[in-house]
Image (cartoon, rainbow, N blue to C red; front, side, top):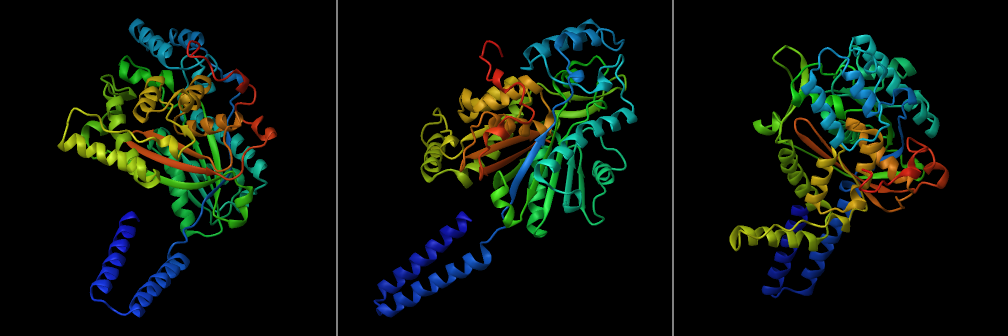
Length: 460
């Protein structure tokens, strides 16, 4: 779009210059400007009317207290599993201590058993446990009937049942026969943001529609019972969570909606072997399946974020920030290679940030790279402490945190940044339409704990 605008400016300037140099009559200026005005009017009326997508509301799961797993219980149960030796237990204790988790995160009932239950039936029961309550809550909050849903997207990376997730939900709620359903698997922690991008594109085609996105991760199938330390990390950091999001392109729903989708952006580095293999599911030497997380994951994440941020910045940053960045790049390349490239100030256009909750160290590194402070990291770090890493649904617990704190005001922009295996990175930028009232802010997953946050650095 910027190239089109630049090209239009060059053409208009060239024509005007030609008219002046040839000393044409004033009528030629009038004709030229009239044609330009007519062209811009037609363009705005017929070609520049993109479909607006609104976020009506969303719901996040608050698991039952029986699923709480403090560190002592986690390690105590793990010590009774024959599959773990002393080195494995010591390593998991070290991961938990540095994870940024609190003592009240949740694991599904199947993983409270000794040994854990990882059969298909337990996973299906976990699906029902994490998806149905949030779907019920979303329908109740929005006064929506399942028959009114036109598009359904469900994402879960590690578990892919047949019938699919979408079919399970359609069967439960007796949805219409023509509902457009999609199940996304293997997309990692960025899957929820990817699902929103998919829903946006579908809503461009299917007018006057409602779309529901359900995001979760089924943990009972992902438990690793081996000795390889890179595969033990996910046992320690992944926790229960799910979110349901209602989107629409109906103009009459704008006043009832919380947010308007301002921008989506997807980038990935699956073409690069090192990045592709940085996080991968594979068998260990004993044939046990697990997810290997390589040591260079932070470096890969930094490279992935850099490309996404560069493209995003060109779309939303003010001219002065773009100019400073461009000058710094030129200076480093051609004048002084020792100078650092200027990091644009995204706080000039974004008021709130929802960063990936993949770990305290990753949150800190991402914030450092974007030059964000404690205030901008707060939603991610507090979500990580209270609920752990909930994979793709964590972004919605962060947004719920900001709402519970009543920080999101009308006109504010919220940046949700999803990063997952592949690796891939997806940015969502929302604009607040309707701020949350006091009653709304007291509901949701943070209702009974928001007064305890934010924690001091020492407590974290």
